[in-house]
Image (cartoon, rainbow, N blue to C red; front, top):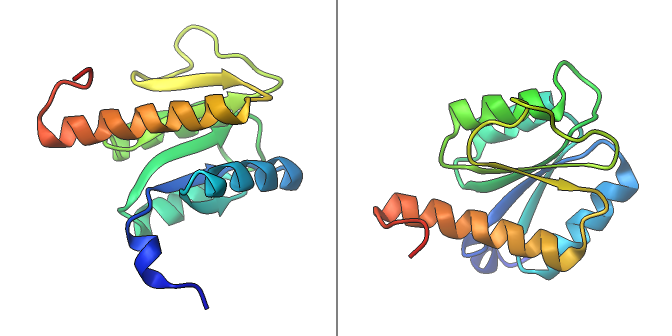
Amino acid sequence: MKPRGEIRNRPVILLVEDEPLVRLTHVDILRESDYWVLEAENADEAFEILKQRPDVKVVLTDVDMPGSLDGFEFARLVRQGWPEVGVLVISGKTAPGPGDLPPQTVFAPKPVPPAALVEQIERMIDRAEAQLSGESPDT
């Protein structure tokens, strides 16, 4: 059984990725960087997690996935329903066109180097915490 005390202090990341090997790789990278990772295979599963877990700090989503929404539409709905949650969209096949990404959403092409992935997530968490505390995100 894993100790609960350590979990409470770790930022929670929701990873939405349908490819098992890619998902496993990203989970490993994020857990090694001391994040608590929740996993979903598509947007529908991810919405259920977001509804139940108000502690999610960042959503990391692929663009191309099965289900009713692609990653761009999912990102728009997350930004509308959970504006305090950072959103990082990644894809190895589809780059965003004009209007694909909602404000304050970041895109990264796959493969994302582990250090760059962690750095981007850290920036999103710092920005969200600054907004919650009323500080400028750049301070």
